Length: 193
Image (cartoon, rainbow, N blue to C red):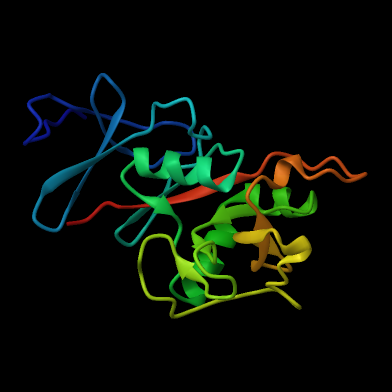
């Protein structure tokens, strides 16, 4: 089935990609989503820092995993997509994220999880969402956040069924006996106007 997309000057085609929802794509593989007033917003999923086949939608948000390896590098990649590391507003969103991104459980089995956007980098102990949204929900694991070694100002989801843990900026470079894997960042981008 062929249909056009108004507003961008290109004729799109309806395609189904493995593990991605059926959507309109242009020849440059830009993702277009019509929300609300019909003005298309785009997220370019064809970038080398995006983890393949991880794009998902919930309500008016698009979520995708990006490379870091540090929290700041993952946040910089989120900004390139027009978003931030994910802001989790309630238990339902937390559960949905935990249940829909297999990389969370893979990462947590290596002691990591997936980076999210809550940080106390500005003031120790005052956790804020990097998006600027008010903190209305948290899901810290037992005895977390603990600011281990005085270095943990960022966060991951993945412990104990979707609870959160604080991590240091460059967790993957932590010098321990255990060799930790590379942490991915979970980006959230508004896809509605």
